[in-house]
Length: 606
Ligand code: F6R
Image 1 (tube, rainbow, N blue to C red):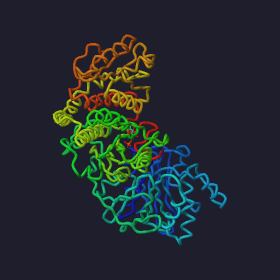
Image 2 (image 1 turned 135 degrees about the horizontal axis):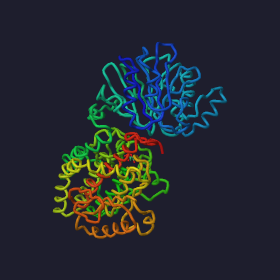
Image 3 (image 1 turned 90 degrees about the vertical axis):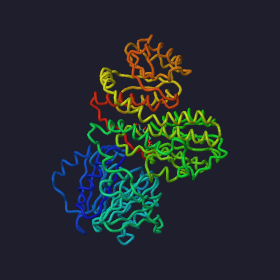
């Protein structure tokens, strides 16, 4: 969702601000804008446009304003459509104060009505503009202190927000605030940054400061002050960013998504590193697993599918009941949860609002929280008792690939860990699984070496209107993930079904020529024959079957072979051809692969 960058320092600000916005493009947006401070007392420089950053750059031409401080924004529309006037930054009535915002101000209707009564005029339909007017009044009341104004205004706001503000009378100063929405400080040499995430400034500095809930960052080129809403100065919590700038670049691949698909062997081995034969204290020390009587996994979208696979593994190996819940639904049905519940939120970004809110609900009721997350310093791990970080590196394409693979690995590692702690997993079986886990990177590599025929086959189905995905056991969540990827990228009807469920209704969808992707259970497993029958059922009704299997399968119209592995680990391999199908379909249909329409990478609103 919205991308936010602030820069103050020795460089001309337009360049790092624009560069930061480009690096945040992956978050998804539909308009963009920049505001810069010029000399003290001079009017702010501001430009904003609907559409992609290219539209904004077109009007900027080659001119670079003589400014060393400013803010930039990519907006994913919520309140008001993606127009020039709704694009951020928003100004106060004097045009001296500019604000950018990510999130939602829930009480904006009443705030706006009140401001209008006091004579403020509005130029946009956004919830954000009210903040510019409020800050303007509050700054005057605080003798021109923008940080004091921000503290006062944040106390009045309801909802979730990251805010950055600048004022023309204070060039060089940027004030930021956050509540339930991400904001990090980048610490440079003679320059400092504020941004939605570290990728915005990673090519300038690897030093970052975490900001907590309801904290205010007041930065200049040489100084950083962090306070709470009461104005109390807080210590700096600095960390080193382990990603390098090249990790956030395409590196010769046509799209980030393709690059990230090919990075999966490394992402898996990095996530497994030092953990295959057990999670060490550095991961588990914050969490007491004794006496838990159920596990609840909460997540959204792709991460939810990883959770579903986790359920199969954890229930089997740790002999404990596991519920997997869509985070967006969880807290609203007021589920029973207590201190015997182990809650596992799974989130690539660590900022997904639905997951965060569900997690807080459970935590308030005593649940012990063991998060799985890919982003250091993000909100979900900060608020958890323990974290298993996945090491996928930055995932830039909106559609998740390598993060999903590493979330699966995290599920297996937690399943094995719980099995060992609870004494429920047979030592020989654990050893076998560990050995199979260690082989996964090479097996994914093997699949990636042979994807060209699959890309060609996918193009044959370019004009299909619908594609169905079938699986059983762990193949079922894999099928759900395949269908989600295809919807996101190809904008076509796609659904995943459990093979055995077809005859209870969905089989009515099959007509002559309907492509059906079937994920076959491991050869000789209990369900292999049952799935073969399900495939015959769809074939008999005219479906064209593309089978993903670890052994020959004569009934398939097209067979995609994957290596054999332990049956619970199969999704790690089977999902790779599914990712390639959706990638190729998007390319063939001329869709935007890395930023599919209507989607945002980090969903920071409920
Ligand atoms: C799909 C996708 C989304 C995310 C979901 C959760 O390709 O990326 O479904 O998986 O929005 O995001 P995180 O993992 O950041 O909480």
